[in-house]
Structure formats: structure tokens, C-alpha cells
Length: 440
Ligand code: 5AD
Ligand code: SF4
Image (cartoon, rainbow, N blue to C red; front, side, top):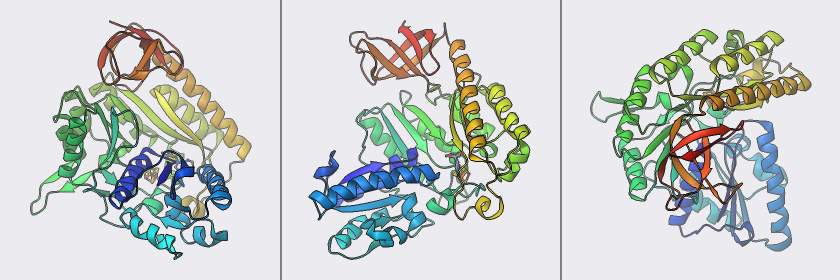
């Protein structure tokens, strides 16, 4: 089996679950799709261009199959499978297998079915499935950092977002299974885990037969105390659900990285309301102030959408001023892409012309570069603990790693320092995207 993954970190974690399930059924992973009997594309539906990329790639695989290996099976799994369902099987027999995010346990059966020429589709969503008992094989080659999914789905129903339809209702994974997966990673020499969920702050586990509830702050603390040399990251946080309790747990544990991904999406209360986000400009700013106060060293990153339905020049200006006010260390920035069946598609005309969406996006990107560089300049002269990830891609004489704030720091190589070690590095200069320094 060959698997290719698009979209978010959650999909990367899911691909590991998929490979584990197939592995148990006798399939081993291959690195070259031409050697595979089964090709799976784990897909993303968040924006139209994400889907177009997958269709282009699918054409490459299909043409190889047609010309060289007619027995090869091709499957679409993940969000596009969930969104397009039968259409993918019926439309010019595009693919052989279609599996949604909650049906991966059915994959061995579906692959066998497709192999015998039957229709192989399962797009049932579940209220319970968290793949809790599956201890995933790791795909990445670095053996330092791993994703651990702690919850699935999303109940927020933001007006523009297809995720609640493709990934289903929100559900949390049992803390014991999370802790034992993290412990296995520690035993395997891993140095960093990222706890994943569409909205980690609404993590909630009710202990069976009691009224005891484990919330995200408590889970985070339980993970942090497993090993003080294991770094812990998490993503994504929802502004109104991110509690001070979480911030205090972060402050109390050195190994919980000081970086929070807190998507704002837009800067004006009018737009946020239209997007059905559950906060205002002011209440978002209040959360930022809480972070600044409790975690003065914390980096903040965000997601921004430009040109959402009804966005005016004034709304856009408020997004820009928000970016400057927060001074985000990092941002993912997108043009609004209307998605079928969302509230926005049904109720809010996609009325901002594409040229304006693009112009606003370009401005947002330029402002982000400026604020990120300002933040990097403030780091010059400071010393950071860096977890080394490997040799710099640009120069064999340099190593790179990340600070707790998730910034990449590049510095000259020294004997005995390798991937997975912690070193203290003083920052001597910077570019927009990288810090440069030397070991102290
Ligand atoms: N168009 C553009 N961006 C979107 N996102 C979600 N839905 C859309 C859409 N329809 C962005 C949001 C979210 C990130 C994962 O993708 O910013 O936080
Ligand atoms: Fe989509 Fe909103 Fe859920 Fe994020 S919080 S996945 S933007 S519905």
C-alpha cells in the first residue's frame, strides 16, 4: 500500500492509523506508488484548490494504472470521500475505493471487495470512533516528533466550514489510551508530541461510573508530567474555549511549549458574527491579553480568511489592525472558498470579487511578513533552548531545530550534537522566517 496525505496534521495522524489497520491485515507500506497494489489518497475538502490538487494527482495515478498495472486499486479516503461519496465511484469510474474518516477499520474488507470487482464504499460517520485502541505506526522519518490525536470532529459550525460535515460530531478519546500512546513514544525515544484536535479546548472525557470529568487542561497536565524532557505542543485552540486554566497549566510546566495557535479568521466583530464565530473582536483581544499576562514568552499564531461574504474595506482594515496589534509569529492565510452545503453557501452570497479577495490576501501576507520579522528581531540577543531536528537543508555545516515558541533556529554544527538533543542557542540575527544563532 502506498499512501499520500493532503491537508491538516489530523490527516497525517489518520494516515498512520490507516497504515496500521492495513498492516495488521497483511499490507506493508511502499515508498514508490509504482510498486503498490493499493494507492490511497488521504484528502482535504477545506478549500476548492485543495480538492483540485487531489484530482490532478489522481489523474497521474490513474494513467499509470491504465498503462502499466490494471490490477492496481486506487482509493480516496478522508474528507473528499465523505463529501463526494458515490459520485467518486460513479463519475467515469474515478476510483475503486471510497472511505470516510470514521470508517478506516473497514479498509481491509473494502480493499478485498474492490479487488473482486465489487463496489467498495463506506462513508458512515460515527459518534464514538476515536481509533483509541490503535497504536499507530509512524510515517515520518525523524523519530523525534509525533502527532497524537486526542479528539475528532467539530461541533462549532462556522458558516464557511465544511469540517463538521466531513469529520462529523465532536468526540474525545479516553485519557488512558492517550497517555499510553505518549508513554510508548517516550519509550521509543521521541522527544516531542503534538496533541491534535479540531478544537482541543473542548476535549472532555467523563470517567465511567462517576461524575469525574477530565478537561483539556487536566489532560495536558497528565501528559506533561509523564516526562519532563518530552516537549508537548497542541493544536488547534478555539478562542472562546481556551481557558485560563489551560494557560496556567502551560505556565506551570516548562516542557509544554509556549506557542498557541488561536485562529482569529477576521478582525471585525461584524465579520466574526457573519462567520458564526462565537467571539467578538474585543473578546478575542481579551484572550490575547490573558496569554500575554500569564505566558509573557508565548508565541501566537493564527488563521485568516480574506474576502468572506460581505467583507468590506473597513472589515479588511480591521483584520490588518488585529494582525498588527497581536503581532502573530506565524499565520496561515487563505482566500475564502465557498463550500457546498455550508451555512454560508446557503445563506450568504459569495459577493467579494476574486480580484479583491486576492488583493486583500496579498496585503495580509505582506503585513504578516512584517510582523513576523519584527518578532524575530526582538529575539536577537536572547538565548533559547532548541530541540535539534537535523542538518540544515541550506548548509551541511549547520544544524536546525525549534524553540519552545516553534520558531526555526539555525546554528553552526558542533561535534556530538545530533537530532533529538536539546541545546542552548543565542540568537545573533534573523530573516523573516528563521532565526540564526550560535550555541552557548
Ligand atoms: N475558505 C477558506 N478558508 C477556510 N478555512 C476553513 N474553511 C474555509 C473556506 N471555506 C480556513 C480557516 C480554518 C483553516 C483550517 O482553514 O481559516 O481555520
Ligand atoms: Fe471549521 Fe470552525 Fe470547526 Fe475550525 S472551529 S474546524 S473553522 S467549524
